[in-house]
Length: 256
Image 1 (cartoon, rainbow, N blue to C red):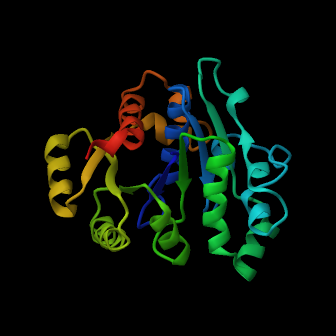
Image 2 (cartoon, one colour):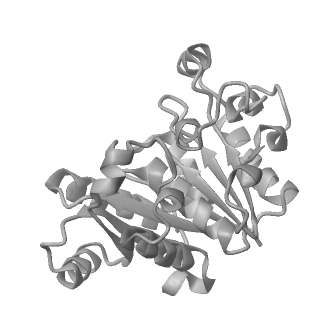
């Protein structure tokens, strides 16, 4: 059965889109069939990260939501644009970055049940091993539905008091929704920290496993979401941590 992995955070700007995109690439290189879906319709990010031009995706996830195409038609096959070493397949389902489409979502909303049904249909029709979902931050009806549909909820946070409080709220909500596996990923951690101590503290506070701690990387900041980090820096220590996280998320039982 394909695994639905939702990547979420309480606050904006924590690096969800970068994380989802990089994990998707790494998992595809491990011979998995992967799709990464942008459900952040008000502030889409995957098109930029994958270098998609408006002419590349003939359809976007927005078109599916408004019944203008089948869900698999919104999946852009990014495999040919990635290094030949990739043994799996990678599909990108972008949200539209066109101003008119963003305004349409804001003005009319969309059918959240159709969104969830579309994800399961996509996983089936593309014969996926895993489906990664990049979400809008915070809590709303759509994110609650995504939580409920997920096999794994990966919550991304930074070592910040606002993140600490908000993440606690996310964990409690996810537990009430009976999400099978909830895991934490800590981003932009200075190497001056004792990483083992940070991991133990976070696991104790939230009673959730930490899948990985992403060290601060100047190269990531300089890249500025202009490319996929793991392709530009395949031997970087951050890439190695991301590989470990990917294995944790798709592995049987997710390390729990």
